Length: 190
Image 1 (cartoon, one colour):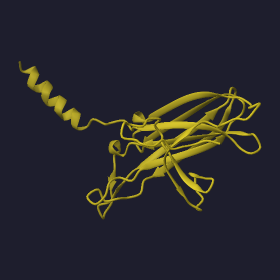
Image 2 (cartoon, helix red, strand yellow):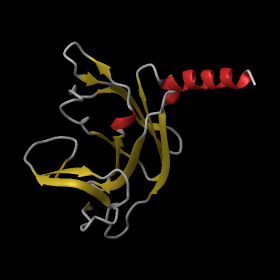
Image 3 (tube, one colour):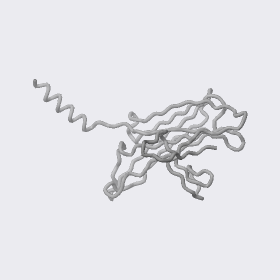
Image 4 (cartoon, rainbow, N blue to C red):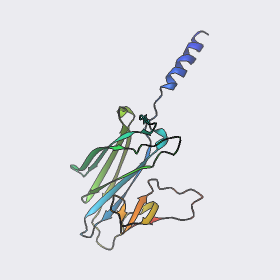
């Protein structure tokens, strides 16, 4: 019977130091530019509730997410990028965590393409988020529509940025899911 209280005490101590893995949702879409060259857009959104924030001297909190993106053809890496994504500092008593949404674009050859995305916070590489997917890129021999890219938000804007398309800022919906309360389906295709 002595072991039970010791086990319970150890369990409680260890659960205080339990670390949660970074969570994200990822999607991608395939497009063709005006010259007929194929490119993919890989986009993701991070769950801000599962991050470990650091507090600065004025009480604002932020974190840094390391991003590793690789796109492979049948025989080689055709795109690779590694960079840190620093979140905007915010005061948790005055506002919610800002949305963490990012995108990568890569030209891809015909044939099978594999994409890999890894996200992790500084010092927490062992709890990284990993995403992999593959798809076939074919040369269109007739009129071709791109993948459907579900949109979360779209608004007219002359600003240039990673989400700018056709005179609009088009923020993609990273999870292909609409719940029962949704009355409208917004998407982008070319």
